[in-house]
Amino acid sequence: MLKGWLDKKVGKPDYVLLGTILTLLCLGLLILASVSAAYSLKFGDDTYFFLKHQLTRGVIPGLILGYLAYRLDLNRLRKYTPLLLLFSFVLMLLVFVPFLGLKEGEAARWIILGPLSFQPSELLKLTFIFYLASWLAGRSKKDNPVFSKLKVSQTFLAFAAISAVIIFLLFLQSNISTLGVIIAVGCLMYFVSGSSLREILVLGLTGIAGLFVLIKVAPYRMNRFLVFLDPDLDPMGLGYQLNQSMIAIGSGGLFGLGLGMSAQKTGYLPQTISDSIFAVFSEETGFIGAFFLLALLLTFCWRGYLVAKKTNDAFLKLTAVGISSWIIIQSFVNIGAMMELVPLTGIPLPFISYGGSSLMITMVASGILLNISRRNS
Image 1 (tube, one colour):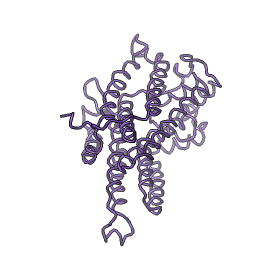
Image 2 (cartoon, one colour):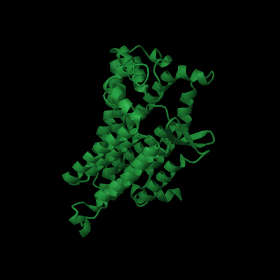
Image 3 (cartoon, helix red, strand yellow):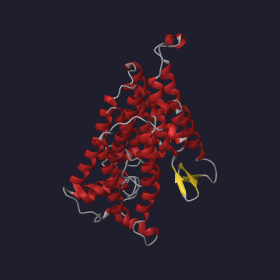
Image 4 (cartoon, helix red, strand yellow):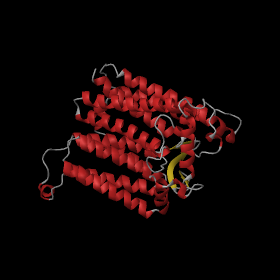
């Protein structure tokens, strides 16, 4: 059964992209091993507790699924993109089911299945890219006369409708950072597909207005934004993580304190293995290490866009643009938050942060990107 879904076309992948992905994966494990050792002791005597979890629940399933994605017949999968997106919507709703969903504070984002947990919003990023690429690639040049009189296209209305559903689901989960990434990627794909400047302008203004409303309706978001403007406004509260992350980054200097030598990870900086992992990495490896990591992420984006440029198939081109944009936008949102360039968010750093769901889906997306590059050879 699976054999019929595999692409028989033989081709060589983009080896620079492949090398970049594997380097990021290895670097992420190295960083996690260094950062999580002290934190792991809170859960027992095993200093590699979180590293083992990342290997068994992120790396290994990610490599297996990533290889299957690399071999998959993407054109056959294309007709099932609406079902994949619908499946993601169902999973997003399951987080609110008692005894199945897990809620931490204001956020309900995880599904619990025995000892395993999964974050559906990670899958939503990929299925939305797939669906939008398929829709934009197959849209009709002729529009409904009713929509033409209103000076809006059917594609624009469809994009707005799907975006509204995603906004609603992520708003319920209090996951505004993921929402921002998904909408930014969607707008970029919409732009690349050749849409009119007028529609892109409307999308941009609507997005800014919507962000303002989301900030206003939740006091904690407004407070977080105010603290971003002035971290000293609440130095021991909302501004604490920002101040400590800047101390960590600044303490690294040019060459860093050395792997395992971070002081901030020993209880000063919150979320060291997830949201704040870049700050600790910068403290231990300095400017050189941080620059190397940024260079790898930019190389991933560059090769991904190059794959898209070489692809003649509109669906595959937009998929490559979407995946590349997603990884680089999410990376800069995470890193920017640690450097006080954007408001603090709870979004992981791709390939690096602890989290099985995030790493597994990132590896699947990487496999798809390599799959598309194989078709160009």
